[in-house]
Amino acid sequence: MVRNRVIFTGRVQGVGFRHATQMQARSYHVYGHVRNLEDGTVELVVEGDREEVAGFTASVQERMAGVIKETNTTTEVASGEFADFTVLF
Image (cartoon, rainbow, N blue to C red; front, side, top):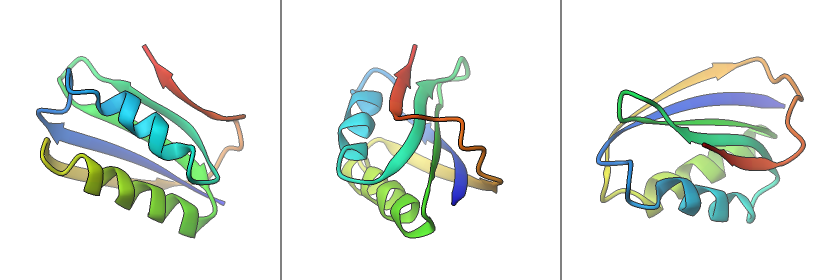
């Protein structure tokens, strides 16, 4: 298991980014959340098998490429704290 914290910058709020990410998560065996941050970025925290996390993250980047300016990924120790993938408000 791996855990990635991904920060997306660009025009990523108010464009359906969180909803699209949650929909993409249904195609992968991943757990975590996506949320808007106060600084205008979007944070994705995702856990799962390395290949699933990589595939999921790549699919989000591809689907939302028109609004993402930069992606910053940090790999962390998986906590196993998530039961599903959710949108945080």
